[in-house]
Image (cartoon, rainbow, N blue to C red; front, side):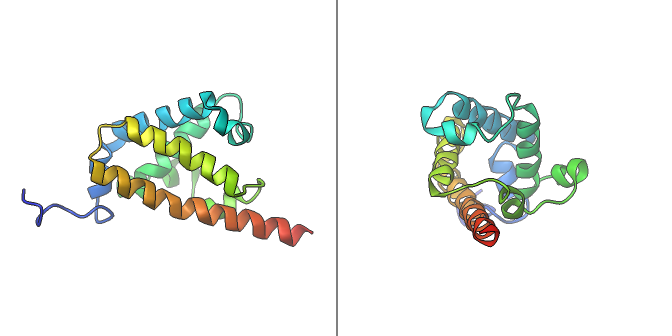
Length: 144
């Protein structure tokens, strides 16, 4: 397939395919939580999770599956979700966002994805990460 006929990330299931489908997403999420568990820079966000990360890992895997254009597993298993609204219950600031994105960047780097997809994926994940901070700050301000 030539470069001009390659599917664009973000259309149909091109991103889901580039991530290695469900198995690839599971590897990404496993690496993500291993990094969060071990990296001192993630201590603040790790403390926001239960000791057992298996449910969080399943939810993130299911969410990413649908978000990347694959099966909408999160909706099937857990119902609908607004990522910013859900996460607004925690005091998530720019430091927490950057730690989350740092874990994700390290996890993405471990994957056998193309450099093009690695860059695309991290940029796309930055969007909801920024929205989570905005929603959390808005909720905190409303509570004052």
